[in-house]
Length: 187
Image 1 (spheres, rainbow, N blue to C red):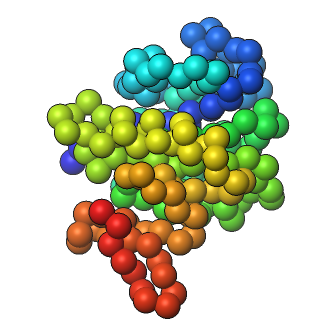
Image 2: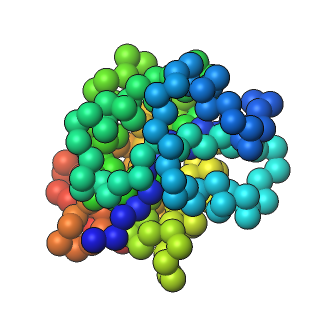
């Protein structure tokens, strides 16, 4: 099984923080952050030309999303809650198999969502040839500037409310849940 890095990326075009400093503890107000030993997201972000955009990557866990537990999703929820007071959009990079489940956990657990929270991932993980991960990551950086508050999935040039999209494992793609016409394949 191929593992995709699951981590929370904190995006803020106005925050004056250097993401290279070791201030994860200050940002989250805790010392219980799990260090991701194979964080690729920062390396890819550093390759992008992102004027007027600063990012802060919070390595949360490095695990196949099929192996995520309720405790892992709770840790994700607590991390997002800790980031919300910064009033900056949040991008969560996540394995596509259980991305929607984690997003729905956030939707159920957050009292309010004052910023766009975008989940994104890749059908073929970052670092592999023909990966769609960088495309989806880049589109997510743009989407958080345009989307209204709420929890979203951004993949392959599309944005979906978290409760209106599902992954179709048989077709290896995502489907839009359309109450009138049923699920429809989007890629």
